[in-house]
Image (cartoon, rainbow over all chains, first blue to last red; front, side, top):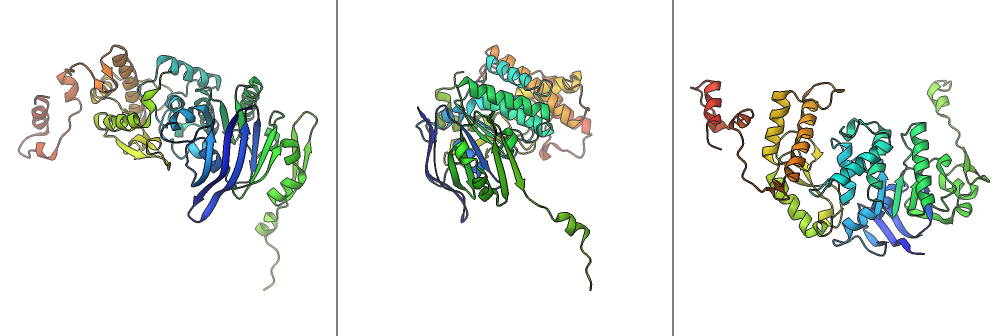
Length: 275
Length: 157
């Protein structure tokens, strides 16, 4: 099996803090990875390096056997379809949905002179399929969160990438849109033409096709390997610093029960204080 | 898709530089700059054309096309976005839409290429008169506004 992504002691440092801390990871063709971690664990930073939009501060990263250097960066970016509203929301504002989708063809944020009529037809077909007809010429910042997510999904798919990296793709989608997105991802995984890396906070989005899992904690790969051996109550209890009960169901789905008691209401209403 | 050598870094940054100098924003008609959008070791992979006044990543359009498009929207009341309120934002969106159509037409008719217009362009005088640029040197307090406008409009392009 071909190695799709290989990292060796991969680090990303901001100031004195490691956002990604010496990660060694290998993704092979045919594997579909679930990346699980709390907010601030480094998921988006790791994925933005893998997608070629951030450079590591140390260590090596190879995608399809090549590094993101001057010669290969645009070609490699097109091989990785990257859906990340937490990344792209920072850069896209008044750009139209259609132009953002077309920008995926070039591995840049912008379109280029070489956009063909066939490219535009394909971008429109993808947007229509994602229920974005009538919103194609709207500015990105005038769209709802779910619509923005759909624009980014179309942008990621337009190049028919070898790897699809989905950074919390279900966030902000309504129930129908989320189910549609999950069906899309499932169908792509079953086509065996694309390797999927799926980041989520939600156990109900864990799908049977996600045969590998990496748990990220404070920028480190806390655990990685086969999903059934990594996604355990013990590992997740340490990861989340709470008591977690994980049940892996016969159909491959996962249910999690997190014991996270809240005392906010008590504090809000206050306790009787005698002065 | 044919993106081969055009997307080698050396070519891309030069193309962006030339385009940002030559073209204007398809929304506001304003000047374009090159801006570093993200942090990346590869310089070319982090730079995009940007319109500072619209705060947007912009591909840009030939100034002649923008001028025609803004005339078309303003004088012929073209409105592509009928479901939206008519305001300055939708006016700009309409101009940008017409720019897209005109740019497509010019490209397909072989009037433009990557370097801009490849044929001489003789803009109709009346079109230019609709969007005059007045510099401080053009202001003459002894003349009326209409006289100043007429004087600028009559100057050879």
